[in-house]
Length: 290
Image 1 (cartoon, rainbow, N blue to C red):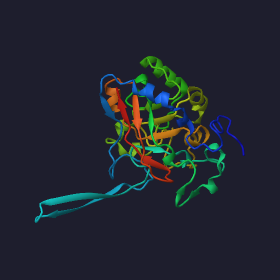
Image 2: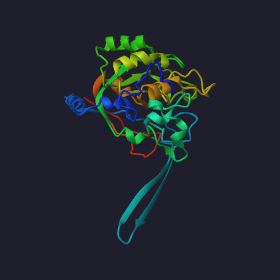
Image 3: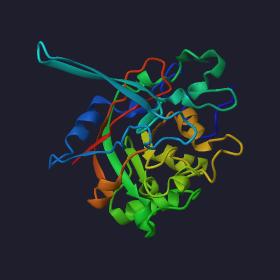
Image 4: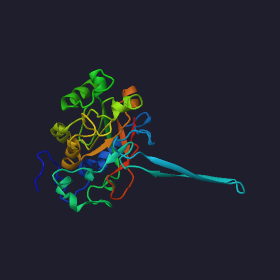
Protein backbone atom coordinates (compact mmCIF):
# COMPACT_ATOMS: atom_id res chain seq x y z
CA UNK A 1 0.00 0.00 0.00
CA UNK A 2 1.43 3.37 -1.06
CA UNK A 3 0.32 6.21 1.19
CA UNK A 4 -0.20 9.60 -0.51
CA UNK A 5 2.40 12.27 0.11
CA UNK A 6 -0.26 14.56 1.62
CA UNK A 7 -2.48 12.30 3.67
CA UNK A 8 -4.63 11.71 6.73
CA UNK A 9 -4.48 7.93 6.40
CA UNK A 10 -4.16 6.31 9.80
CA UNK A 11 -4.63 9.60 11.67
CA UNK A 12 -7.71 8.20 13.43
CA UNK A 13 -6.87 4.54 13.02
CA UNK A 14 -6.87 2.12 10.11
CA UNK A 15 -10.61 1.42 10.41
CA UNK A 16 -11.68 5.07 10.33
CA UNK A 17 -14.28 6.06 7.72
CA UNK A 18 -15.15 9.59 8.96
CA UNK A 19 -11.92 11.34 8.11
CA UNK A 20 -11.79 15.03 8.97
CA UNK A 21 -15.21 14.91 10.62
CA UNK A 22 -13.44 13.37 13.62
CA UNK A 23 -12.46 16.93 14.51
CA UNK A 24 -16.11 17.75 15.26
CA UNK A 25 -15.98 16.82 18.93
CA UNK A 26 -18.71 17.62 21.44
CA UNK A 27 -16.70 20.62 22.61
CA UNK A 28 -16.30 21.86 19.03
CA UNK A 29 -20.02 21.51 18.36
CA UNK A 30 -20.90 23.47 21.51
CA UNK A 31 -18.51 26.28 20.55
CA UNK A 32 -20.04 26.40 17.09
CA UNK A 33 -23.60 26.48 18.42
CA UNK A 34 -22.72 29.58 20.43
CA UNK A 35 -21.93 31.56 17.26
CA UNK A 36 -25.37 32.83 16.12
CA UNK A 37 -26.46 36.15 17.62
CA UNK A 38 -29.19 37.35 15.22
CA UNK A 39 -31.24 34.20 14.58
CA UNK A 40 -31.10 34.69 10.79
CA UNK A 41 -31.03 31.50 8.72
CA UNK A 42 -29.83 31.12 5.12
CA UNK A 43 -30.60 28.01 3.09
CA UNK A 44 -27.65 27.20 0.84
CA UNK A 45 -29.43 24.55 -1.25
CA UNK A 46 -30.18 24.92 -4.96
CA UNK A 47 -33.58 23.82 -6.33
CA UNK A 48 -33.90 20.05 -6.73
CA UNK A 49 -35.75 19.61 -10.02
CA UNK A 50 -35.40 18.04 -13.44
CA UNK A 51 -33.55 21.00 -14.93
CA UNK A 52 -31.84 22.05 -11.71
CA UNK A 53 -28.08 22.21 -11.21
CA UNK A 54 -26.27 18.92 -11.50
CA UNK A 55 -23.27 17.46 -13.31
CA UNK A 56 -24.06 17.61 -17.00
CA UNK A 57 -23.42 13.89 -17.62
CA UNK A 58 -25.82 12.70 -14.87
CA UNK A 59 -29.38 11.47 -15.31
CA UNK A 60 -31.90 14.22 -14.70
CA UNK A 61 -34.01 14.18 -11.54
CA UNK A 62 -37.47 12.70 -12.23
CA UNK A 63 -40.52 13.20 -10.05
CA UNK A 64 -44.17 12.24 -10.45
CA UNK A 65 -46.95 13.05 -7.98
CA UNK A 66 -49.75 10.59 -7.32
CA UNK A 67 -52.84 11.68 -5.44
CA UNK A 68 -56.31 10.69 -4.31
CA UNK A 69 -59.33 12.77 -3.36
CA UNK A 70 -62.32 11.03 -1.74
CA UNK A 71 -65.48 13.17 -1.96
CA UNK A 72 -67.26 10.88 0.49
CA UNK A 73 -64.85 11.73 3.32
CA UNK A 74 -63.46 15.02 2.05
CA UNK A 75 -59.99 13.56 2.49
CA UNK A 76 -57.28 14.10 -0.11
CA UNK A 77 -53.62 13.18 -0.12
CA UNK A 78 -50.68 13.58 -2.51
CA UNK A 79 -47.28 11.86 -2.59
CA UNK A 80 -44.18 12.01 -4.78
CA UNK A 81 -42.07 9.33 -6.41
CA UNK A 82 -38.56 10.61 -7.09
CA UNK A 83 -35.79 9.04 -9.17
CA UNK A 84 -32.49 10.88 -9.02
CA UNK A 85 -28.73 10.64 -8.89
CA UNK A 86 -27.62 10.78 -5.28
CA UNK A 87 -25.25 13.53 -6.45
CA UNK A 88 -28.00 15.75 -7.88
CA UNK A 89 -28.61 19.26 -6.60
CA UNK A 90 -26.86 20.29 -3.38
CA UNK A 91 -25.21 17.18 -1.98
CA UNK A 92 -22.34 15.73 0.03
CA UNK A 93 -19.85 13.25 -1.43
CA UNK A 94 -19.03 10.25 0.74
CA UNK A 95 -15.32 9.53 1.17
CA UNK A 96 -15.71 6.37 -0.92
CA UNK A 97 -17.07 8.29 -3.90
CA UNK A 98 -13.67 8.54 -5.61
CA UNK A 99 -10.40 6.61 -5.54
CA UNK A 100 -7.06 6.46 -7.33
CA UNK A 101 -4.57 3.70 -8.08
CA UNK A 102 -7.06 1.14 -6.81
CA UNK A 103 -7.16 2.57 -3.27
CA UNK A 104 -9.84 4.50 -1.39
CA UNK A 105 -9.51 6.61 1.77
CA UNK A 106 -7.27 5.01 4.41
CA UNK A 107 -5.88 2.54 1.87
CA UNK A 108 -9.01 0.40 1.37
CA UNK A 109 -8.97 -1.53 -1.92
CA UNK A 110 -11.80 -0.38 -4.16
CA UNK A 111 -12.59 -3.89 -5.44
CA UNK A 112 -13.26 -5.02 -1.88
CA UNK A 113 -15.78 -2.24 -1.26
CA UNK A 114 -17.55 -1.24 -4.47
CA UNK A 115 -20.36 -3.05 -6.26
CA UNK A 116 -23.70 -2.32 -7.90
CA UNK A 117 -25.25 -2.74 -4.44
CA UNK A 118 -23.36 0.29 -3.10
CA UNK A 119 -20.09 0.92 -1.31
CA UNK A 120 -19.10 -0.61 1.99
CA UNK A 121 -16.26 1.81 2.75
CA UNK A 122 -16.55 5.56 3.19
CA UNK A 123 -20.29 5.46 2.47
CA UNK A 124 -22.44 8.48 3.16
CA UNK A 125 -24.03 7.13 6.34
CA UNK A 126 -20.64 7.66 8.02
CA UNK A 127 -21.13 11.42 7.73
CA UNK A 128 -24.27 11.56 9.85
CA UNK A 129 -24.14 15.31 10.43
CA UNK A 130 -21.91 18.33 10.05
CA UNK A 131 -22.21 21.07 12.68
CA UNK A 132 -19.36 23.54 12.76
CA UNK A 133 -18.20 27.04 12.02
CA UNK A 134 -18.65 27.84 8.36
CA UNK A 135 -16.52 30.29 6.38
CA UNK A 136 -17.48 31.64 2.95
CA UNK A 137 -14.64 33.06 0.90
CA UNK A 138 -15.99 35.20 -1.94
CA UNK A 139 -13.12 34.86 -4.40
CA UNK A 140 -15.16 36.38 -7.25
CA UNK A 141 -15.78 39.56 -5.25
CA UNK A 142 -12.12 39.71 -4.22
CA UNK A 143 -11.11 39.60 -7.87
CA UNK A 144 -13.78 42.14 -8.82
CA UNK A 145 -15.49 39.87 -11.35
CA UNK A 146 -19.00 38.44 -11.74
CA UNK A 147 -17.52 34.96 -11.88
CA UNK A 148 -14.17 33.25 -12.33
CA UNK A 149 -13.37 31.81 -15.73
CA UNK A 150 -13.97 28.23 -16.81
CA UNK A 151 -11.00 26.14 -15.71
CA UNK A 152 -9.54 28.94 -13.58
CA UNK A 153 -7.69 27.51 -10.60
CA UNK A 154 -8.51 28.82 -7.13
CA UNK A 155 -5.11 28.90 -5.43
CA UNK A 156 -4.18 29.03 -1.72
CA UNK A 157 -2.85 32.53 -2.34
CA UNK A 158 -6.26 33.63 -3.64
CA UNK A 159 -8.00 32.12 -0.62
CA UNK A 160 -5.59 33.76 1.83
CA UNK A 161 -5.98 37.12 0.12
CA UNK A 162 -9.78 36.82 0.10
CA UNK A 163 -9.85 35.87 3.78
CA UNK A 164 -7.63 38.85 4.61
CA UNK A 165 -9.86 41.22 2.64
CA UNK A 166 -12.96 39.87 4.40
CA UNK A 167 -11.33 39.96 7.82
CA UNK A 168 -11.84 36.26 8.55
CA UNK A 169 -9.51 33.39 9.36
CA UNK A 170 -9.87 29.78 8.28
CA UNK A 171 -9.47 27.62 11.39
CA UNK A 172 -9.23 23.93 12.23
CA UNK A 173 -12.62 22.26 12.06
CA UNK A 174 -14.16 24.80 9.68
CA UNK A 175 -16.43 24.06 6.75
CA UNK A 176 -14.94 26.08 3.88
CA UNK A 177 -17.28 27.33 1.14
CA UNK A 178 -15.75 28.97 -1.95
CA UNK A 179 -17.81 31.41 -4.02
CA UNK A 180 -16.56 31.50 -7.61
CA UNK A 181 -19.69 33.23 -8.93
CA UNK A 182 -20.19 30.37 -11.38
CA UNK A 183 -23.75 29.71 -10.15
CA UNK A 184 -24.77 33.16 -11.46
CA UNK A 185 -24.61 31.84 -15.03
CA UNK A 186 -26.70 28.71 -14.48
CA UNK A 187 -29.99 30.29 -15.55
CA UNK A 188 -28.51 32.59 -18.19
CA UNK A 189 -25.90 30.49 -20.00
CA UNK A 190 -26.55 26.79 -19.43
CA UNK A 191 -24.19 25.84 -22.25
CA UNK A 192 -21.28 27.60 -20.55
CA UNK A 193 -22.27 26.12 -17.17
CA UNK A 194 -22.19 22.61 -18.61
CA UNK A 195 -18.83 23.10 -20.34
CA UNK A 196 -16.56 23.20 -17.26
CA UNK A 197 -16.00 25.27 -14.12
CA UNK A 198 -13.48 27.11 -11.96
CA UNK A 199 -12.26 25.77 -8.64
CA UNK A 200 -9.26 24.41 -6.75
CA UNK A 201 -6.98 21.67 -8.02
CA UNK A 202 -4.73 19.18 -6.24
CA UNK A 203 -2.05 21.81 -5.56
CA UNK A 204 -4.24 23.09 -2.70
CA UNK A 205 -3.46 19.94 -0.71
CA UNK A 206 -0.77 21.30 1.64
CA UNK A 207 -2.92 24.35 2.44
CA UNK A 208 -5.98 22.24 3.30
CA UNK A 209 -3.85 19.87 5.36
CA UNK A 210 -2.37 22.75 7.34
CA UNK A 211 -5.75 24.41 7.92
CA UNK A 212 -7.49 21.18 9.00
CA UNK A 213 -10.67 22.09 7.13
CA UNK A 214 -13.26 19.35 7.75
CA UNK A 215 -15.32 19.80 4.57
CA UNK A 216 -15.12 21.95 1.46
CA UNK A 217 -17.84 23.17 -0.87
CA UNK A 218 -18.46 25.62 -3.68
CA UNK A 219 -21.11 27.03 -6.01
CA UNK A 220 -20.15 24.60 -8.79
CA UNK A 221 -20.93 21.05 -9.88
CA UNK A 222 -17.59 19.56 -8.86
CA UNK A 223 -15.75 22.01 -6.56
CA UNK A 224 -12.87 21.52 -8.95
CA UNK A 225 -11.13 23.38 -11.76
CA UNK A 226 -12.44 21.71 -14.94
CA UNK A 227 -11.25 23.30 -18.20
CA UNK A 228 -13.67 21.33 -20.37
CA UNK A 229 -16.43 18.74 -20.33
CA UNK A 230 -16.63 15.89 -21.09
CA UNK A 231 -13.37 15.31 -19.23
CA UNK A 232 -10.72 14.39 -21.81
CA UNK A 233 -8.97 11.96 -19.44
CA UNK A 234 -11.76 11.26 -16.94
CA UNK A 235 -9.54 12.50 -14.11
CA UNK A 236 -10.74 14.61 -11.15
CA UNK A 237 -7.53 15.22 -9.18
CA UNK A 238 -9.08 17.45 -6.52
CA UNK A 239 -11.76 14.85 -5.78
CA UNK A 240 -9.19 12.17 -5.06
CA UNK A 241 -7.05 14.59 -3.05
CA UNK A 242 -9.93 15.64 -0.79
CA UNK A 243 -11.91 12.41 -0.48
CA UNK A 244 -9.22 9.74 -0.80
CA UNK A 245 -6.08 11.39 0.57
CA UNK A 246 -7.36 13.83 3.19
CA UNK A 247 -10.67 12.23 4.18
CA UNK A 248 -12.43 15.54 3.52
CA UNK A 249 -16.05 15.52 2.36
CA UNK A 250 -16.98 17.66 -0.64
CA UNK A 251 -20.25 19.65 -0.78
CA UNK A 252 -21.33 20.51 -4.32
CA UNK A 253 -23.87 22.96 -5.80
CA UNK A 254 -23.93 25.33 -2.82
CA UNK A 255 -25.95 28.53 -3.35
CA UNK A 256 -23.83 31.30 -1.85
CA UNK A 257 -25.55 34.26 -3.47
CA UNK A 258 -27.52 35.47 -0.43
CA UNK A 259 -24.47 35.20 1.80
CA UNK A 260 -22.51 37.25 -0.74
CA UNK A 261 -25.30 39.83 -1.04
CA UNK A 262 -25.34 40.33 2.74
CA UNK A 263 -21.54 40.07 3.17
CA UNK A 264 -21.91 37.12 5.55
CA UNK A 265 -18.54 35.41 5.77
CA UNK A 266 -18.70 33.34 8.98
CA UNK A 267 -21.64 31.50 10.48
CA UNK A 268 -22.87 28.34 12.14
CA UNK A 269 -23.00 25.63 9.47
CA UNK A 270 -25.54 22.84 9.90
CA UNK A 271 -26.10 20.01 7.44
CA UNK A 272 -27.17 16.37 7.59
CA UNK A 273 -27.28 14.13 4.51
CA UNK A 274 -29.84 11.36 4.14
CA UNK A 275 -28.90 8.16 5.93
CA UNK A 276 -28.63 6.35 2.60
CA UNK A 277 -26.97 3.09 3.57
CA UNK A 278 -23.96 2.23 1.40
CA UNK A 279 -24.59 5.35 -0.67
CA UNK A 280 -21.81 7.20 -2.46
CA UNK A 281 -23.37 10.55 -1.62
CA UNK A 282 -26.61 12.22 -0.61
CA UNK A 283 -28.61 15.36 -1.03
CA UNK A 284 -28.36 17.88 1.79
CA UNK A 285 -29.82 21.26 2.69
CA UNK A 286 -26.98 23.20 4.29
CA UNK A 287 -27.99 26.01 6.64
CA UNK A 288 -25.94 29.07 7.53
CA UNK A 289 -27.11 30.65 10.79
CA UNK A 290 -25.90 34.00 12.14
